[in-house]
Image (cartoon, rainbow, N blue to C red):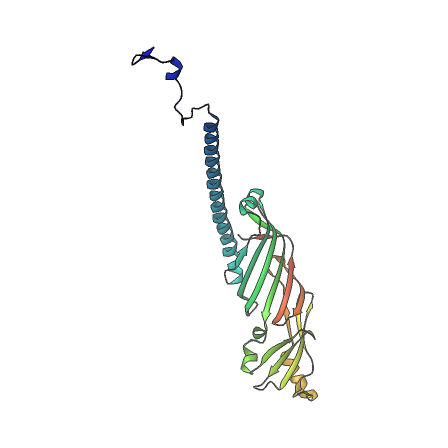
Length: 254
């Protein structure tokens, strides 16, 4: 074959232009591989983002369900913790290992302003019923809530004394009249037992002492509690009292 009078080999017409890479070129293969990896990475990121979104939505809905049910008993909406395990995984297994409910300002047994921290373990749904395998709870009562309205009318305050496991009830504007009381747990009964009152550190006469201690002595029955809980321990803390409870298998209204 001739071109402008010269002879040009046929292979010269099929020679690849420098810089252009055909499908069989090694560099072209590397480019395709990189593109595939990029697409795969973007797909993984997209799926991961969708999973995170789904987990957040489901966690919120499940937590809201527990909070709404608990609010009917607590009188306030609690915060709900569902543990570190993804809720989607917990749902697939049909069980919640540990559901935590915490709230302040709870009203119970004619007392207000209580703090509660409840753990519900092995929560399951079966045949339309939600059950809990076991439960524990800590109920805290601040010192300012222990005396009630009657004590406030007497200008009284309650001062915790954890070292002696007692509460000191101070009466009057100066707090000169002091009644030491010992709270204790007897089965399902909380007993408040007063000791001899003092005035400016001096013990009061027997008759007056008896009148005062008679007004301070109390018993509170802790029966018929939710989830068949039973009191386990009563502790005097720096802030007031803490009551620990425990319950076994029970049904929940969720």
